[in-house]
Image 1 (cartoon, rainbow, N blue to C red):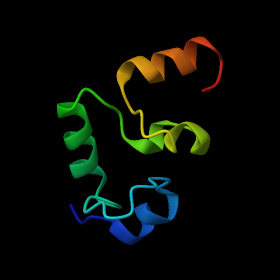
Image 2 (cartoon, rainbow, N blue to C red):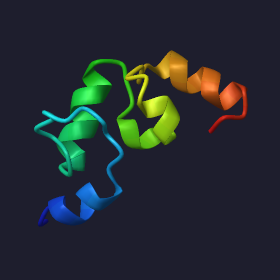
Image 3 (tube, helix red, strand yellow):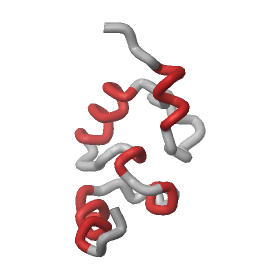
Amino acid sequence: MECNKEKNKEKCNCTYEPCSRKGICCDCITYHLKMRELPGCCFSNTAEKTWDRSFEHFARLVSNGNI
């Protein structure tokens, strides 16, 4: 399967600029799951900017109706 890196980057809201995984979703998801995190694209732009991508942060946002 061919990676759609450029197309994926159009929708990527990751604010970590030196990220080598931008647009390579399979690598991004694998990396973050190993860290007990979700990738930035699972969060709103505001929540992503906190760089807290933990499962717990995501659960709080869902519980509060922010996602």
